[in-house]
Image (cartoon, rainbow, N blue to C red):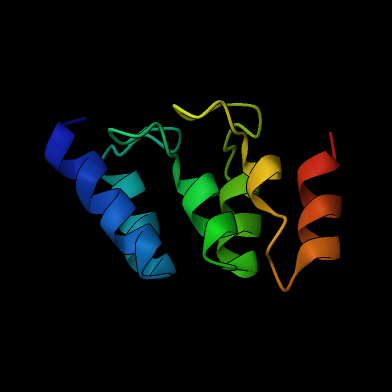
Length: 94
């Protein structure tokens, strides 16, 4: 897996492009890759209210407990989400 593949992966996550996210994962992108601020794809999906994408990432094995540079997990980024209750249920599942 290359840095370029992982950065492209996060680019697609930021734009909620699931088919391209899945394709970059197929080519070796790490589902738990963290950008320079420590954000993972799951954190980006939660922060941008991409509930469907967040659910798909979790179904693919995204780690819900990773923390970014500000020591936040994906669950900590839910506060302002319009899908608050759905995200809480999704992120608190085992």
